[in-house]
Amino acid sequence: MFILPQKDSGTPTTSPGSVSTQGLHSNHGDGLEREGSGKPDQKPLKLYGVGDPTAMFSSDSPYLSSRGSIIKWFWDSAEEGYRTYHMDEYDEDENPSGIINLGTSENKLCFDLLSRRLSQSDMLRVEPSLLQYPDWRGHLFLREEVARFLSFYCKSPAPLKPENVVVLNGCASLFSALATVLCEVGEAFLIPAPYYGAITQHVYLYGNVRLVCVYLDSEVTGLETRPFQLTVEKLEMALKGANSEGVKVKGLILINPQNPLGDVYSPGELQEYLKFAKRHELHVMVDEVYMLSVFEESVGYHSVLSLERLPDPQRTHMMWATSKDFGMSGLRFGTLYTENQDVATAVSSLCRYHGLSGLVQYQMAQLLRDRDWINQVYLPENHARLKAAHTYVSEELRALGIPFVSRGAGFFIWVDLRKYLPAATFEEEMLLWRRFLDNKVLLSFGQAFECKEPGWFRLVFSDKTHRLRLGMQRVRRVLEGKSQVAEDAPSC
Image (cartoon, rainbow, N blue to C red; front, side, top):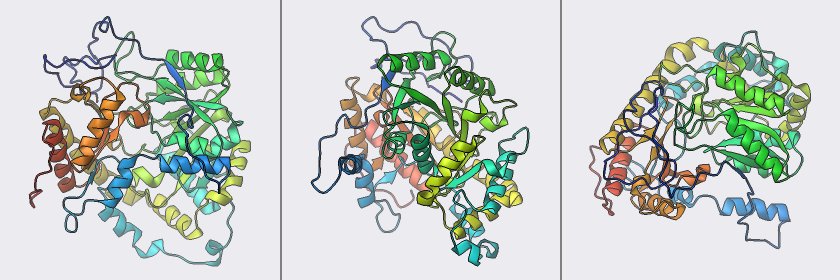
């Protein structure tokens, strides 16, 4: 669903590629009205960007290698908001004036369901094989269960095979491992932007692999049907541009459902992207970590593993984890499915550094095989809670007259706050972000996702009602120009 409420006629558009906001209340994101060409003085959005993660590197340590200094610099330069948040976290009883976190994409809605299920007696088993070194790609019993699980929920045309499964401690490790085994130092992956910004570090810190951004913009033009739409033409232009700069591109990263847009690719779109990759002999890594978090029934989700025929199965690699769909970001379970045994073996070799304990592997197998609990208890309730939280935040944004993009998938809404920037610059975006933080609410700003239009923010809604209400009160306070946090009523 794409919802872009009508703007006040007196509000200026402050950045290039403005979105038409007339009559955009379509339930399926179709039929978006196209706005005429931008203002004469507007510059066209750059079509691609070759990332240089250390362009701003300015520190060194006499105790570290050059690589170690860069790795430390990444930590030191991490977004200040999360460090500030962890020093002043909201707690209803202990710290009611603390910071509300609407920036981290975690599902905090179903801890009650998960704690009950994970505490049941069948989840704890200790035997010698679980305390010894496993097959590095994961215990066979777990890989068999993952193959059955993905076959069912991805709706694969044929049963998936355990020998194509590799288990690691999360998708961050998967990105790092794939970058390291697929690319030479200095090579690159294409990635549509805006994108989940931590992937920059995932592929760079070990593999020294860069990202080539395929910039998407909010203006709906030509044959496009929605804002920030990825097309093969944009992929081709970005690839050509990277090649012209002497950058060798080895693959394409797709996030489906997309983070931060919540976009869901149709089977036809997936096929077109995969055919593009095959033409250029590119690997395709499809991150489907939100695949079971599509809570709008009208949104038809299709996994890459559901396609009848993959254009290039040896270069197509799917990853999934329990961090998002099961609200277990702290448990660190991720899985790779690839038909390429060279890739599977190379990634498995790195699992000795990124593996899971045998006890956790046993728990995960038990969870994934409990289809009755997943289908009858967890997923229906999780979807209902996600939808209710999304509805509340959407209504709050509409009441404020704020445009946003949302498709009914994931934990976040991509919010257009451009009209609150005095000038269309990332400096002004950062100042607005800091005003939110000063008023004790943490959001994620668009530049962290490589969005090239200043003023977009990601707002996470997958939290309990009392925290959402308080967080949205603070958001409203900032946007209405009130700079001081009022006392929070206990009823919130």
